[in-house]
Image (cartoon, rainbow, N blue to C red):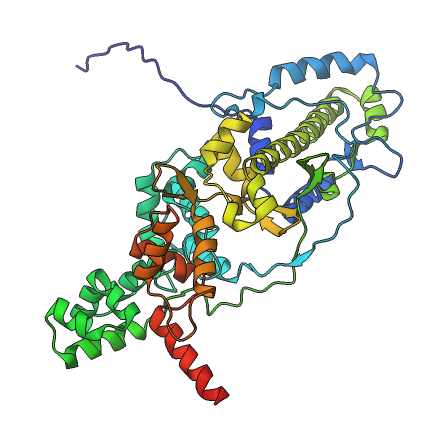
Length: 486
């Protein structure tokens, strides 16, 4: 006979109210995606319509619907009012009565720049993700990785940032992201979603058949000797690995035949134009931000259906009250999106005033956590608010994520941003003697003289990210140029 027992278990679960889920979803949409979402919502919800010139967005009409249905709607609204547990960003921004009023000065819409970050590579990878055997969480991680790739196919965000960006819908650890990342890296094109050329080469070599000539030595070079190839020091490489010239040449040819930019063969151009989400200008001694007028969709409640709600029967009333609640949620969520975007943008501008005044050389180290603390929101909220959102500054149009940068230590115990180091590095290379380019070690020493502690490997990494060749490459280029002039 089976023993029966009664057990009491206490568990804790995170439940997101529908309005909070909608607000989170709207925050991560781009301007174009938001416009499409709003249009679909208007077509599906008769209580919403576009506001005409002179109308106050959100206005329901003179009647306001009547008292006989307002009490039941209010009760429903209070019952379904959103619970912000699990993500604290909704607590800090209220919903005002002047949602439809312009956000800041009436600036012109200059600075529309052609978008060269098309999604051909993303489409190619997302198709493969759809064919792979991913569960729901893994598929979400894979999509986040795909959308974090730059034009060359490299992963622009860390696994920690990707994990934070998936919350609260998916609570994952960086190790889970790393596991999915390794599977993405072996999709076509092999080596995509790697973090640097060295990792890209190692992944591509790992995918080759074991019988490939020179493969074993090429893998050793990719692990321990790429710096020798970058510097053109084949003799030093042969001595380091103890390999003869013939084997070494085969291995080097194999590496040179690989694709260091796996996304380069895709046509990433698109006919889309980037329109700033946020504008920045100098007003009375300080930098201030304002949202683009395109962020205001000019919506209002449909007067006819509001009046119809008073005269409808029980079944129709229930349907219309549900659509009215959805319309109110959308209006509130749109305002919340605008307030969050404006607050996060202003915090970024306050933190990077040096960049606005002096350029990249004055860029400060900045991470998501810094802005989250300033804005009083969660890091995942900052990640959503800055992804594929653009800010027009006097120095050009930049994605909000551009202003986040890792740091390099200084000799006095301080920190300087990687963007600033890259700017200094480019300046040093531009000023070097034409026929005698500086090596990475010499550049590292010059940076150290300025108080920046950047190792030779770090200098090489930043130089490559700037698209600048090694000292030997620059020397050969100068010789070819001199020969043409002669």
